[in-house]
Length: 138
Image 1 (cartoon, rainbow, N blue to C red):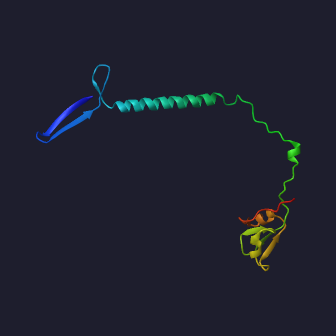
Image 2 (cartoon, rainbow, N blue to C red):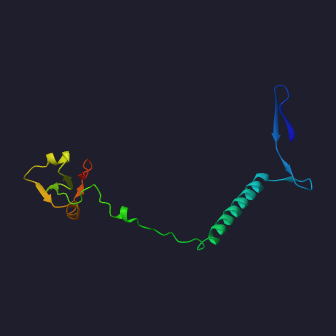
Image 3 (cartoon, rainbow, N blue to C red):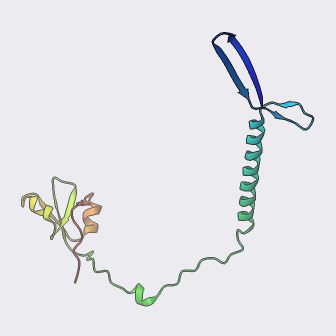
């Protein structure tokens, strides 16, 4: 570290500036030492990333494939949600409701449309009302 003293006005101010420098093996001042450190850091990161990627590629195809086995007891399980319950919609709206939904009370009898299942209502372009859930079988 070198210190340089510049005297602008002898009677009032002493300005001191410091500068950090690096020297190479021959004793010459090295310019932009941070750039060399940055470059070295990037090279190390790239080599590490490439090594990881190559390691992952060498393991491709060597493992056994995933097999899915079905348990008959679970596969025959009946959902408690009824997909066969009839649903209602307004001929002037875009939403459908199950019989237990509070929103159904706002649909007038003159505009009420009945569908045998939710799938039929969805096929006609209706979507389930956000405050409504399917009827649960007990």
